[in-house]
Length: 397
Image (cartoon, rainbow, N blue to C red; front, side, top):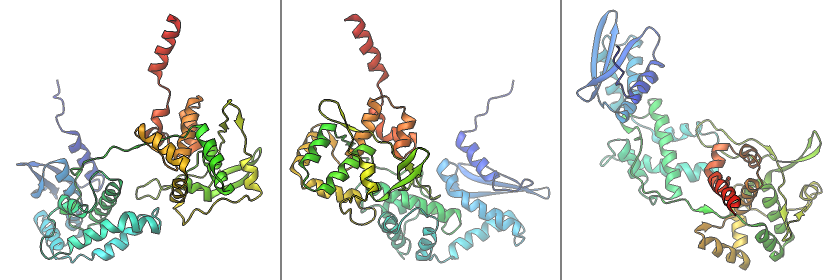
């Protein structure tokens, strides 16, 4: 009976990742030697081995990956005769290369095509320039990726959203630079670093009656129009700039052409989508049709929303001046929830689920994937367990 494999999953994944980079006839392998990574090559019938200065662990092998690729490249360039020479060449090259971090940062920007100038300046440059300052020190330079990340992130409070953003940006940069042998492999970011995470506040969903009250309390017709659009179509505030009337199969259709970044280096963004109205109801449960699409067609104006990307801030600033909004905000606080410009959009999600719309359709209508939708709005999905017991209690009654 064959013995079951005891090889850990991460080892199999690491070996597969390496083999995908090697030619089919290359006989290269990795293994453990006294808790360090051993590299073995069989070339022209001769076996050669070399122990590399990396721990035999998931993190150690992750750091070793780009260096092994450089050794492999040197070995087959014909400029070295042995594996030992190739390893030494890579080691010397890494130690003698003067890093131009400024140029490296500029080159990296081309690999973040989805980042606007605003996002680049706010979410990337602060932490990248801090890491540049640390790497260019003559004394006290970080010795590895973990030290570099912790020192670079020191100025942001643990658990804050901005620290998470800066950490993600720095990790992307380091992964990108090391994979292309622009930075020594010792600066590979760790799989995780110690973090104290603050719980994310739950976004408050306006009720229909609160929305009507806010509209009635508003004195500016342009802002009333803004509230109505956000509530009925579940818009992101920034989407108010990107509303287009298009010809559809059954007549005119209202679309949002806004393309929100989905993160990552590939530059993925959300797709334009046709908007589906979910009308607000009055106190008697009657649907209210504000003829929003028709009003857009004739060019009714919206309020000023500030700079591109600042739509949410513009709405927040205006709402804060309204006494009624502050009262609703206090109600939300008592529920340990947060009242925000997205509260109009949250209402759309809540009412869609309450009325039995399938989750994939709600996600499509709101312009995001089902996993992203569930991450944000799972609390609004039907509670099957509660419904079962409700039915039982009705039978008993």
